[in-house]
Length: 231
Image 1 (tube, rainbow, N blue to C red):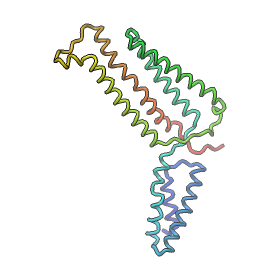
Image 2 (cartoon, helix red, strand yellow; image 1 turned 135 degrees about the vertical axis):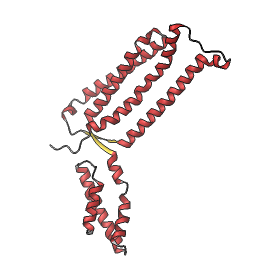
Image 3 (cartoon, one colour; image 1 turned 30 degrees about the horizontal axis):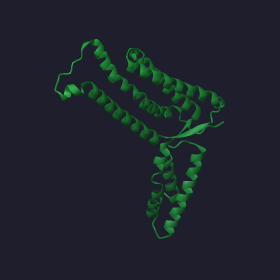
Image 4 (cartoon, one colour; image 1 turned 90 degrees about the horizontal axis):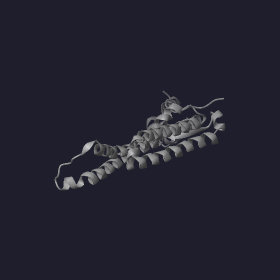
C-alpha cells in the first residue's frame, strides 16, 4: 500500500460516521492535504514513511471524537418538539396536583404549575408564530453537541436527586424531628393525616419534569438529525 492509499484509507475511517455535508467534505480535503504535507516534511527530515505517518496522525487523533460529537438537526421541528415535550410534562404535573388542592401545599404547587404551563405554552405559541416561514424552510439547521447534552442531562439528574434528598430530609425533620429526638414512636392519626404526609413527600417528586425535559431534548436529536439537504 503506497503512501497516498494509506492516507486515503485513514481519512475514510476518520470520517466514517460523519454526516455527508459540504462542510465535512471541505474539512476532509483540508485535513487530507495537511496530513500529506506533514508526512512529506517528516520524510524530508529523515523519517521513514511509517514513522512520518504515525507522527502526522497524532495531530488529528481527537478529530473523530469531535466529528461524532456534533449533530446537525432541523432547527424548527427540533425546538418545536422540545417545547411540546416541556408543555406536556408541565400539564401532566399540573393535572396530578389538582386533587392535592384540598391542602394549602397542594394549592401553592398547583398554582405555580399553572403559571409554568402558561409560560411554556406561551413560549411554544410565540416560537410557532415567529418561525412560520421556517416551517417551509427545511434548510434551517442547528448544530447540537451530544457530549454537552449528555453532560447537562447528568447534571440535571444529579441536581434533582440532591434536591429530593434535601426536601425529603427537611420534611422528615419538621414532621418527625421531635419524635426521633425524644425517642417517641412516630404515629399517623387517621387517613387525613396520612394523606397530608403522602402529599408532602410526593410534591417534591414533581420537579422530575426538569431532568425529563433535558433528557428528552437529547433523545430528540436522533429523530431530527439530518445529513446535507439537497434541493
